[in-house]
Image 1 (cartoon, rainbow over the protein chains, first blue to last red):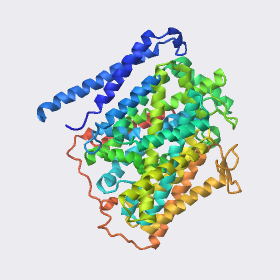
Image 2: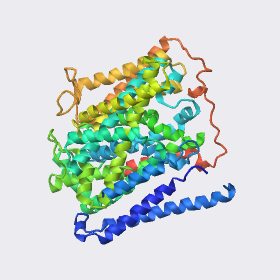
Image 3: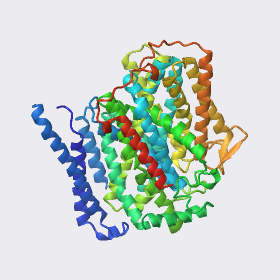
Length: 73
Length: 549
């Protein structure tokens, strides 16, 4: 299998983005969020990205598990 | 903020080598790459700018323009592309017609790529100016150097996977902006009431910015300045079909699919996310103009006294997004500008080197020679893009200039393709004359008409007398496309009838509809068939049109 599932880099990238944004959202100064209507968008959108990235990775993992028995490397 | 950008760059770079684009790409990946190939700066900045300038009528680019055209590509055009050996528009024209038709198309195509890349360059420079506070001229130079480095370092390999990545980056980077903006303005109701102010200030009925069809009875009663006929024929037919059927930057994505059926389904699958793109790109423009009208001077005023609509998205980003998410949004924008520019410059390089230089100027040289010519072409392409970028500064909506270029190039070309594919009697001389006359018709129309309030020059009317004033730039573009299409269509038929066929039926097999074997898809489950998918796309688009009537 010489073709990497595109879901792996996408999932990996958004998982990392999500974690970084969430951590930043937790430690950053709350005054900054006045512009986004008082919502800590970094924290919440970080969570969304984390969930999205994880689902992508999980789908890639599942597809990999399925394809393994059929064509052993 | 910059850290995120850096992380992304590194990630994209290091992962590139893993990917082998080519055959057997799953349909959903090809589908996302298909729309991602045109989800560049032009779409994000241009459609938001149009949303601000023309309101919800901008959605016609999607629900009247792109949807039927994408269905048409999937059902009728893809069999020719996938089945024939053609890998580019000039190549198809050579197989179907003759060498000179290919040459003429290669030249107009090269001009189009330069404009496309120049418009991306303008948008990126504007963004750098706004966010980093750089001088605009310096930003242009920096942008040019970065693109040059990007291309020479081989940044376009495995473009398809990068495009899928970029698609998600853009969607997930802009969605929070739309959600926060919409919440701030008070939801759809709040937006509608703000846009009432915009519409009445501009002298229209109060719903002119939030109804897509209701005010299209006369060109003077809606902000786009077009009536239903010009809208459907100009945008829906000539321009959109021309763009989606003949833009190989886009079509190539579908041809990477594993089988003929997968290739046909690619545009039909791509249509679904595309259908909801207005939410992401037009809505922010409407938010920006709503805020501009009711909270005072949200958008900077340009030298023409109009707001600079191009800045709708950058201004919203700067207004609502804190450090962190702002970085994500900017990264998404810059990534799409970069690849948009690099893709077009590379296409320019290919067309110039192989379709023009190798064929007409110096045939029979070594590969090394052509490689050097290609490098020079890249530099020339970037320099030409700089000129196009300055031309774009004269437009307060980059979508206006972009569609102008499309009306010149894609309008006539679509007539040529239509006749070439469905009428085997059309000849090489006919196609060449048609393309020539079509492009000249476009130039004459553009030179003899002018949008209201503009001075003759780059906006049109440069031939001395102005025969007609259009209410907006976009209306002029639509009619330019109609004239170009009609000029090409009629000329091709007349000249074809008067000249002899030079290609036999055998040579045209797979290139003309009546000489191509029908595709058997009876064995497929009914809901997986391209026809079913296509009808579903059209029905849902029709429903969307009615909702925002």
